[in-house]
Amino acid sequence: MNIHIEENVNLAQFTTMRVGGNARFFVRVASANELKEAVFFAREKKLPIFVLGGGSNTLVSGTGFPGLVMKIEIKGVDYSGTKIVVGAGEVWDEVVRDVVAHNMWGIENLSLIPGSVGGAVVQNVGAYGMEARETIFSVEALDTKTMAIKTFLNSKCEFGYRESIFKKNKNLIVLRTTLDLKEDSTPRTDYEDVKKYLAEQNISAPTLSMMRDIIIAIRTAKLPQPPLGTAGSFFKNPVVSSEQYEKIKKAFPEMKAYIQGDGTVKLSGAWLLDHVGRWKGVRTGDVGVHEKQALILVNYGSANADEIILLASEMKKSIKEKTGVTLEEEVVLL
Ligand SMILES: Cc1cc2nc3c(=O)[nH]c(=O)nc-3n(C[C@H](O)[C@H](O)[C@H](O)COP(=O)(O)OP(=O)(O)OC[C@H]3O[C@@H](n4cnc5c(N)ncnc54)[C@H](O)[C@@H]3O)c2cc1C
Image (cartoon, rainbow, N blue to C red; front, side, top):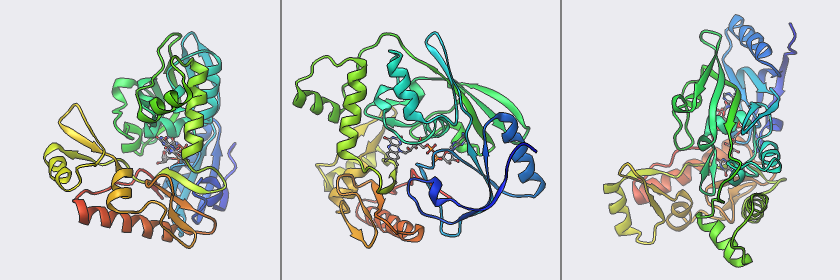
């Protein structure tokens, strides 16, 4: 066996929320073959498996995980014209930095999102008017049911808002992705925070590298930075029917919302939690809601998973009672 399987490994250290119990078994895998070996090990022992990337969107429960956690460390960044093939274990933001340094457009607005490339594909990460799916050309994944490696072209990845086939189908483990970048493009500046920043700084035509710097400046000013424990937005922005939207709007005319092309409306979860639930900045002991962003739950030091889950459920309940809207977790609960 080439892989080194450890026992009773605490998972808090591998997540940005920094809470949670132990994995019964834990292994780091650096290639498709190592991953296959790990899957066979779990199969033999009849253990459930969990795939971990950078742990920036995962909340581990206090009881931990009774199976095998496989941490994906598959590396590699290979440029071929405007396409690059990237290993799932690469750090997403290091790839963004590298791509921008190569003068290629397509993922610059996704700067500073924590986590791995695999995680970014699975979650179809998005920020500041851009989503990963716009640039993902294809994804190579191991199907643990058949143990075959398959390539999914973008159209087969079933990408949606923080959704993909790899998130829905737990048998698929992302090994690599091919990104299709552009040598020339115009900066994506239509997002509110970006427009505001450009106006304040008197910038009219930002270059590619300026765009990355701008996104980093906006994010650094607004989002929690280490040592605070967080998993980013705890909830997704809820998507409701236009009828439900009209009803809620009557009670809350100021509500921020975005009409979608398919007749649904995406509501700002942060606005609801802030203005309807009054959750922004609420803190009990070491667990709280970030003071600048109500979608973000924070472990200020020694919070535990149960406290975080309790706070999240109280937040959900208050929004449900006042608006009828069900907030869904963006964070993966393990
Ligand atoms: C401060 C902060 C800011 C954030 N800002 C944003 C943001 O602006 N936009 C945004 O979209 N997200 C944001 N996030 C959330 C998070 O960074 C992303 O979802 C990220 O892509 C998760 O990647 P990860 O490798 O850390 O995933 P993990 O937390 O390790 O895993 C997340 C899920 O993906 C699965 N997974 C991971 N790797 C693989 C793989 N190779 N194959 C199959 N399944 C896999 C896991 O099983 C799990 O279900 C933020 C998080 C933090 C802490």
